[in-house]
Image (cartoon, rainbow, N blue to C red; front, side):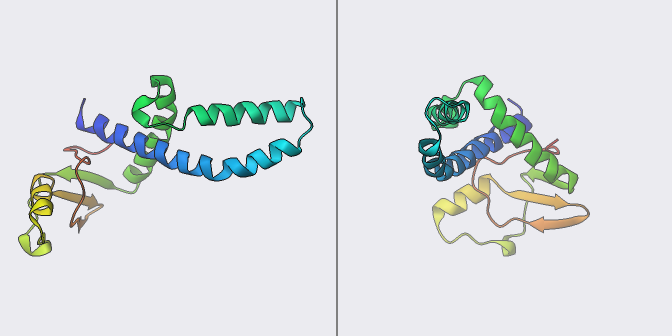
Length: 142
């Protein structure tokens, strides 16, 4: 898997996690609506099927089928395209001056050392003081 594919998969995983939080937040309201609808109506049946389908997707991204993951990948692509359209490019292994960030503990120091990241935004360089492992690319995202 290329670095760009790794980033896309991680973003798709985050999109799925975000969707779960949103869907679980509105499920109680939808259940209230469901119980107010006439039993056996097209609306009630459709909403019941949707809630059942959602419940089956309340699981980690890794446990989804490829078809289900593709739905999250669509949103990951939109996010990455939006970043790219703003000139954001993620690069790794760029040496940042030590004065920019001095980790206080050994664990953070090790993570930072192995995952130094610079983000280019147009002609302006923004320095990232710390990004946890998992966001690595050597070329533009898209």
